[in-house]
Length: 258
Image (tube, rainbow, N blue to C red; front, side, top):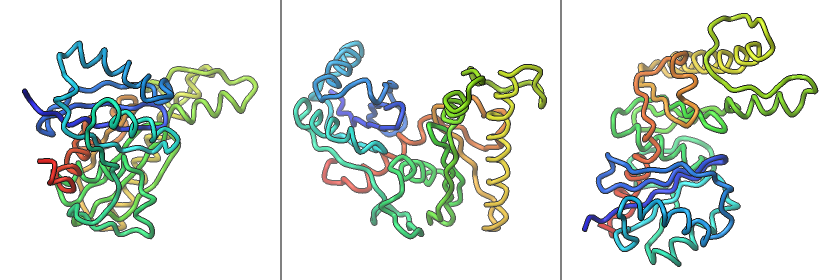
């Protein structure tokens, strides 16, 4: 019976639950973060998914949680204790990860960003990671040193803001617009949000490369990355980058679990 690692990437909008045996291949599901309010509700959701893939709870050896939503952390902790009796670990920027955290307060770095940096470090020493989610984050890795980054509003966050704060602008679906000038309001919004965000990312990446005099690999990941992937310059698109980094964290920090 294969022993599995359970990974929870807890985001503001969605939570990705992933299972892996080797840190390369993942079985994963995307859940609404606020769909469940107790460990019992989380168990009911996951139990059905696990049964469909013939996974038993006793196969889960450890749980790694990368959360940017403190208000739901207790749910994942109680779930791990009550239903898995498994050891659980909170991912954070700490020593012993083969990364130097060259910022003022490493504890403030979002767990998902830490995981992305660890995942990118498997491929190269110099990297810029673009993660398009509820917020869009840019993270810079230079010579295996984390140098900081930037945060932008996510695509849907920007769209919802326009819809909620204006009287006449409609809520629209987002995709890559064909033109640079819209002939109707929905296209105006798409051009402003999708192309505007993509150009901002390209410009910021260009600034970072000049500032550090580096030629890094540029990674693109995140749930909304598919909307901007044709507009944003990147070398590697990896939807599993965060999960890969969480596995790296477990391998480097939780040796006793092996």
